[in-house]
Amino acid sequence: MPDKKKPLVVVTRKLPDAIETRMMELFNTRLNIDDLPMAAAELADAVGAAEVLVPTVTDRIDRAVIEAAGPQLKLIASFGTGVDHIDLAAARARGITVTNTPGVLTEDTADMTMALILAVSRRLAEGERLVRAGTWKGWGPTTMLGHRIWGKRLGIIGLGRIGQALARRARGFGLAIHYHNRRRVHPDIEGELEATYWESLDQMLTRMDVISVNCPHTPATYHLLSARRLELLREHCIVVNTSRGEVIDENALARVLAEGRIAGAGLDVFEHEPAINPKLLRLDNVVLLPHMGSATIEGRLDMGEKVIINIKTHVDGHTPPDRVLEQML
Ligand code: 8YV
Image 1 (cartoon, rainbow, N blue to C red):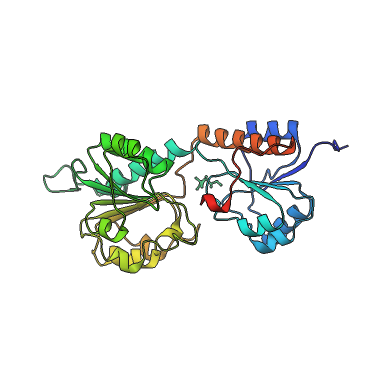
Image 2 (image 1 turned 60 degrees about the vertical axis):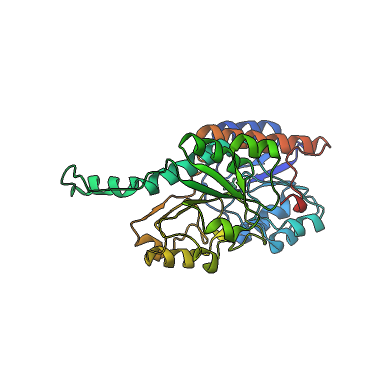
């Protein structure tokens, strides 16, 4: 018999065992052991019964799904930091609280961003493909030459938690930090990072050697790196993105890369995941990763712990620590 006092929690994807076990102990938890992403009809079914829904980035929790929810659905406790897959306004209108898992994937995502900067500049993926293809003819003085990053300029779009963690790493690699943000960060942070602020994104783009996208995807940042802005980049510039594919006009990016108007790109996220723009697949100067910026065992456990704390505090009648409000974005 399910315990009446425990809320029904529906989890849409397979989470780490330790997290699922704890959720089973604390709540009436419905797991998705097979890990097959739920179709829209299954999501509608889930919100028809659940008191708490635990979705991930792969679930589109749009207005239609939220309108299918029964009055018992009170909390969407997302497993992840980005919330662009959830219609926050629709949730608010129905009195549904939304939470996420910020902070715990900052360092891992910053590591992956740095790895992409290095991989593209020093042609890591190309070199690996050469060795594995068995076509490597041995060392040569002019073969596989990349570009030095020491002494170059890194322009960070979005100097939030992940952007700052990237900046700290990048300084160790000799990169000068520049950034564009909606709001200028506190002078202490600017001082620590020796960061130069650009109110005008256009102005920053024309001057950088590396551009990293670290802002969330919101209506205001959709195609922020538009075709026009990509044209502003210098020929030797590389672009990396570990945030959301939608922040870059992916077609335009593929075009400037193919035409050699910029030097390369490192992408962990895509506009239509898991579909990859076929034009990108044909390019050697692009490193493509399957959205694994936060994919560490430690990070996933921390994310799960945050989900549990958010659910537990909400169920106990308190404001969950990671409540997301539209005005925060
Ligand atoms: C997560 C992410 O793994 O948290 C985010 O915003 O992009 C990812 O790194 C994913 O969202 C899990 O739902």
